[in-house]
Amino acid sequence: MKRYSTAVWNGSGKEGSGHLTSQSTTLNKTQYSYKSRFEDGVGTNPEELIAAAHAGCYTMKLSFLLGGAGFTPTELETKCDITLDNGVITKSELTVKGNVPNISNDDFKKLAEQAHAECLVGKLFNCEKTLLSASLA
Image (cartoon, rainbow, N blue to C red):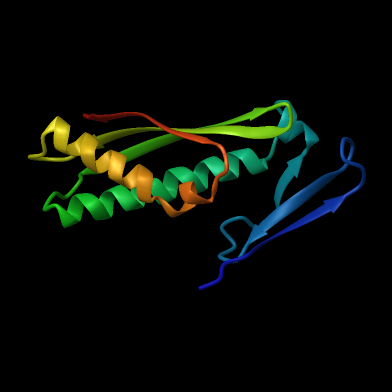
């Protein structure tokens, strides 16, 4: 399986701007720029997209693991914080909250840790990866 996205950039690094389009067109000429990446400008940025990819992959993996253990989550919500420090992505930190009927907190945390270790996107990173917390609603 292969998936792709394209990036188009016009102009200089600081004054220019670009757009991103994903294969599915969920991103369809989505704006990004220096301001959206390093300041508070309108548009997306690579770190935000990395955070979404890590949170999405992790949450789906946790759902599969819960199902394999006989639990069906009502809802799983994962936040991913990406840290960009001096031009290097240094951390990807996950925080997950789950509403999972009939599971103990210990079992949920165990499966949350397993999902963290097995997440395909997380395996791609060459930075510190942390599951900050796993809690039931």
